Image 1: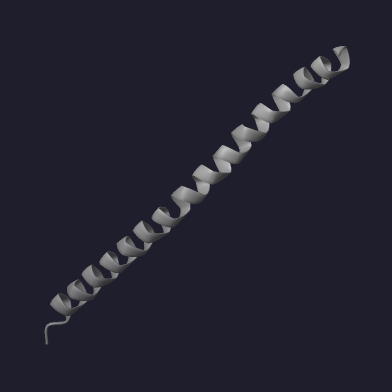
Image 2: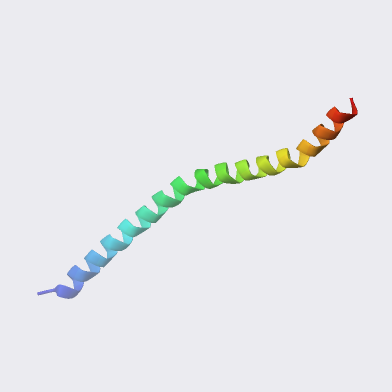
Amino acid sequence: GGLGPVLDRIAAFQEAQVSRTIDLISRLIEPAMMIVIGVVIGGIVVLMYMPIFEIASSIQ
């Protein structure tokens, strides 16, 4: 038989399946990473402004 062509077809199928899986995972991880980055940056901003508000409230 033609074992070589069959193995080539199987390899192409597996490669396409892995490519689709990686694409799906990256599409799911990207929004989650944006949320995490937003929370971290928001936390840093809040932590930077908290002492300023505490000083302003202690002056009054």
